[in-house]
Image 1 (tube, one colour):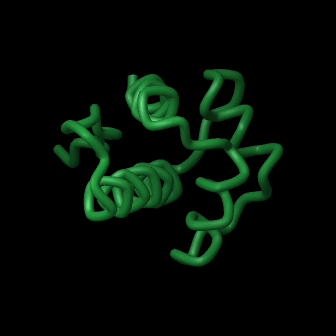
Image 2 (cartoon, one colour):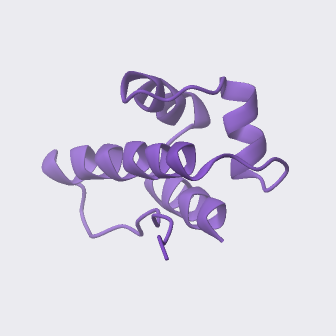
Amino acid sequence: MQSQTACTAMAESSLTVHEVYLHYLNSGGFFDEFEMDAYLHGLAPLPREERDCIARAVNELIDDLLARGAPHRRPRASYSRIA
């Protein structure tokens, strides 16, 4: 599930929900932090565009960590698949 890959990537990279939420908002995200947190924990669905915006925020923050010299490659958040 897409939310699980985001949670795993966040945990492995020590990213907080608040950090990801701020980046998500700055990337054009629409939902509030509570709704995003519920989605990440599998408690609430979000539209595909918002799920992908969250995945992009997580992956961009991981890219920032790697650019600053994080010691190894980290898991990534997955994007939705368009049929």
